[in-house]
Image (cartoon, rainbow, N blue to C red; front, side, top):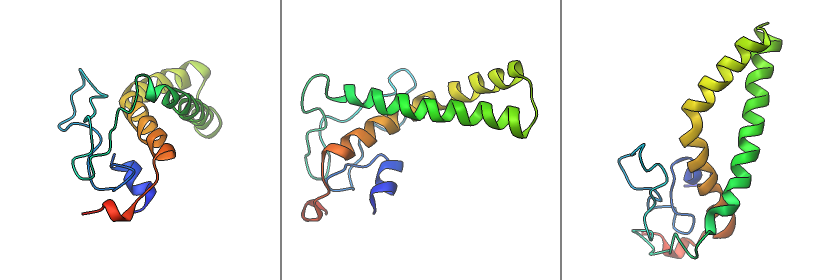
Length: 120
């Protein structure tokens, strides 16, 4: 499994086997992560506030998504500003949890390097 598929599937960055988030998805606690990887025992919460940096990744994601959605609606579809903003609000409400989770996964993948010896 390569890094992109590991990020997309929310897998551990060190072994790329264990799940980072508790399944099934619970909208009341969307960021419910395991304490450690079930496969390689990587500590997924190394210190308090560790995932603070994921907020910046989320900000970048959200900015590009918002510009892309509004630009597409206005320039390609020819919609007005109000219609484009309504579509933006709808799409971003649906993608909110996805962006938060992917930002956390990308952040830990930037910090922890892949180690094939930890693979099952």
